[in-house]
Picture 1 (cartoon, rainbow, N blue to C red):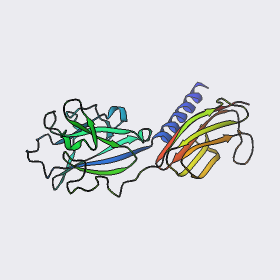
Picture 2 (picture 1 turned 60 degrees about the vertical axis):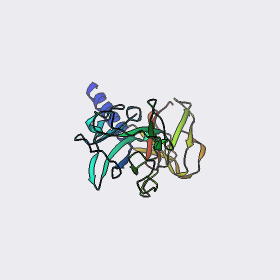
Picture 3 (picture 1 turned 30 degrees about the vertical axis):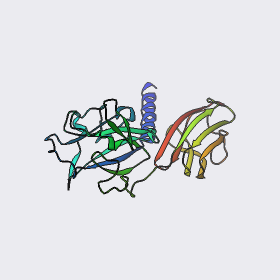
Length: 255
């Protein structure tokens, strides 16, 4: 019995990990063509508040404001352009990333000129940090110490994908025996799917599948399956999907 329970628990945790492993990548680039000083042998780095944004590169978590972190090293793409792809969890969609580029692995040869005041904030040391709104997969290229590309154009590429997303306010009551209500906040309008799964990852019923406008949305689940039969007592998962964002929430049905 203990072995069966352990296998069951492992399968449950694996499913939870799989359905929650939703991420997006922002590809940052910096054009150094107008930079007059030599490039450091350590290359161009990026430092920022990456820890609070769950940022990583190739599976390695980025450190907090640390140009010495080798994972923060950009790749020389040629033509004076350096780039890096940073992965973020969907949970930080809509949040702002604060960062700056650094020439080398230590402070001193970093951005921070007043020319960044239009797209950044005071760094507390007489300079400025960049700020970028995390909206999903994007391709962003800046000119060193400028808010734009070196030709003055928008830094965000037209190929970028801004994710539609939704947040769950509450599920009440939980546990429930008759009916429960799922309250959502649709941040950006778009296609929305809300489904119920059992803990083995098998679909039980669909609560919503269609276009949802921005604003509040409430759904009810009466504990029945897609065919109208009463679902068995036990734990279930409410999966909310919108664009590239997907979250899963546990709910308990009592009979």
